[in-house]
Length: 395
Image 1 (cartoon, one colour):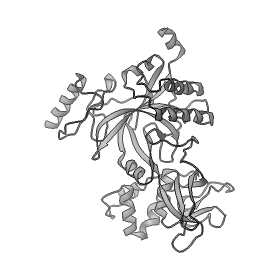
Image 2: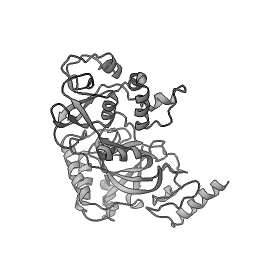
Image 3: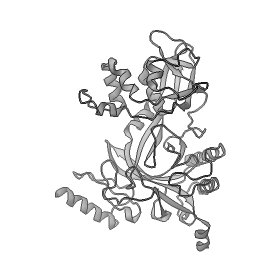
Image 4: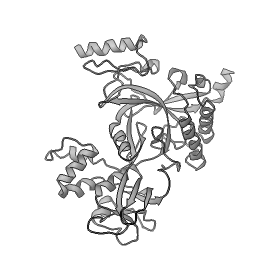
């Protein structure tokens, strides 16, 4: 009863306008927060960022006037990213046509949104509702809650030549393979690609390779030749992605208290006899290609920390623009949300549907820590131009 009263009081305070955007909760025992979202979204927020009392949506995207949401400042960094997003469109990142739950994506429309935001550089625009509409995603649970996770560019030591320590290969895409591509177990355990000249390098730990495959790319340092280069995503084997966390959740006989990547790495180090069984639980496999320069996503432009996202292109096409209420996390809890512009510039085998996006968190150990800390919920809207008849009514 005490919890219910606290939640009800917070909800009433939110509706009355006492709590605003970027509010930090004063630590009641149920740790609910509130966000300056559209009127119908005024609701307490759980520790994981989910809306407490959200109603179910019946369409993948629901149209909403943009003036019912907040908007961030168009910074110089964001302008650079937006100009890169024009390149994503010109690189063929989007083809006109119906998509899943399509609110009306077109090349011309997405370009118009990008150019409009660039024209507002250095400001926190308050007139965009005259030109743009926001289409809210129904999220992970069809109640507007979008799951935000993070990814990064790892660094790994490798060798050109196989030896007793560096003996686990990273493969290029097998372009001459006939039929369905092999699974992870067939590639790593049965070694069906061995001897085809596809080996790009050899690592000392297959878990490191697995992590790089999940991130989609990584920097490699050759300890034998002193070279340093980027291994970029070159495609997948087409097998459905399965999160290896579920392997541990299905095994009551295994004792593991932490199923984060760090926790699973620690467990495998203690139980090397289970390594292949754990990794082969996920049949999906990522191939690489050597490259120079910065880490790039599927949109063929450099990824920018805190702006570039990997998304399912059936819902958030490469080249589109989204407004997000991003969860801000402290000590594992969502304290508040911040409005940000995010740009779909990448894809990922684990990113499916309209309720999950992966935010790029940077390079190396710092990027890894940021990515590991983000597994919370917020809200997301696709930005699209108003239709001609709407513009005519405004004029």
